[in-house]
Image (cartoon, rainbow, N blue to C red):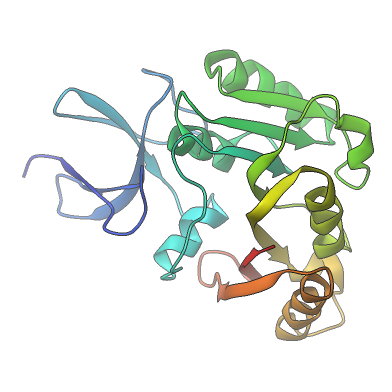
Length: 230
């Protein structure tokens, strides 16, 4: 059975690939031809190259497979990515926004940002690595313009607050946010559902309208994706 790729029915620049054994996988069209980021498979179909998108390595892919209804990140968008790490999901976001979009990647860990710079950003001109702590957005105002979307995946106690503080500075009017809540980074003594509800309340108090909350099991234990609009 030959490999085939077709557009995702709901999300622009996201694809569904059917592999030789009939298995279906998510994919994005590769902006850096011939290069993968985290060992993901590259496939070719009708003259284009695609990267298989692993939901066990990417919470955004997991959310799509858990039937997330809306992904605000689209081609040509500018995205602020908080907690970009070594670029696994950020590189797929780079594929989605494409040559006319941009991804501002904030990461605090020096080792992770070295990997991000050397393995990812060096080959993707729509990504800007920023070595800073997302809790202090005032430190990188000179590097980031106003964005349509903020994606947040940080291992810190006040995840919703950090995101909202960044939104105050960088998010356009009517912009969207995606928050990958790590319950155990916030409070290991509470049930994950209780933590998710608390983060939702924080966002609502800061003026966000919650669009949906999707739990990410079995791909990520004690994680949820919150999608909201200011």
